[in-house]
Length: 385
Image (spheres, rainbow, N blue to C red):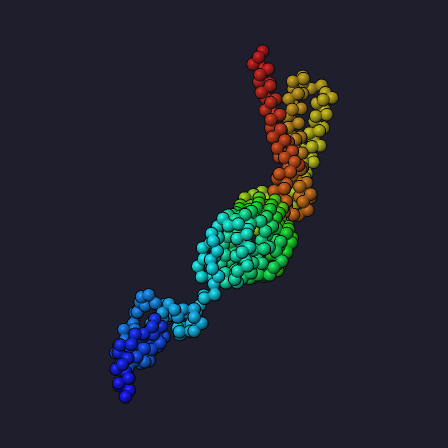
């Protein structure tokens, strides 16, 4: 009776979800190459090595093939259930490229970004949005709360500190934007951050504790920024191991013994190398000014009646040059007192200040120019006779 029934199965056609045992019945396709004989002669377990599964889905780390209809049907057919993995990913928006849990968008409007945010953004672990005019990080972090990697370059982002929405971003890249400063507790909504890339912005100010509470932060990239003012406690509350900058004086904040490589005549706390050098410079400046003023007074009042007018004029010119140089030395020495052991914080501000310009520019150059003018004048006068 059973043989008669199986004989009638010879001409029966199997649907796409079933495997046809030769001259016999149909078995579910998930039973093919599963290590057990399900066909009368075990034909379902033959030729299972190195199967290509042409036109069908091949299960991970298995020889099992299933039909396209069995993918994402809610019924696990594969051993590791990979036939139902990534089944709930949202439809990829226009102007974006999507691959599994990644999304990359370029030249999309803020409306499109909002529409993406209304979707199932919890599935996006990698998010990149560029050339889209994003100005605020707050809404973006709210929408892509689960993006472990968030890359937002080439936008118009001004303030990365405005967000209060807690998220799980570990890698943040907001380079090539318009960020001008980092405020206190700037990234406290992103406590999982391990890397922050801020290169090619307009950052000129790092406020106190701007990386506060980022206990997992390892790398900060601040290259190509016009850093003018840096608080001594800017990196307080973090365990940063690598800071990439153009100006090595930031090392002074992290390691107080670090000496700026670009400026061999200064150290972290002072413009001069040592207290002894400061004392010598102060004495040279003060004594020089006092001596040169007395020489000028003597020559102007013609005390002693030594030499003629040309002789006195030459002495006065040279003395004025020395006087200006002494003033320059004194100003450099006084800068340490003015900065109060915080030269590394105000180095660029000092170098761009009118005080430094008058000292280094006017006084320093004038002291030589006056002497040269006097030499040329006397030479011209001698040759014109």
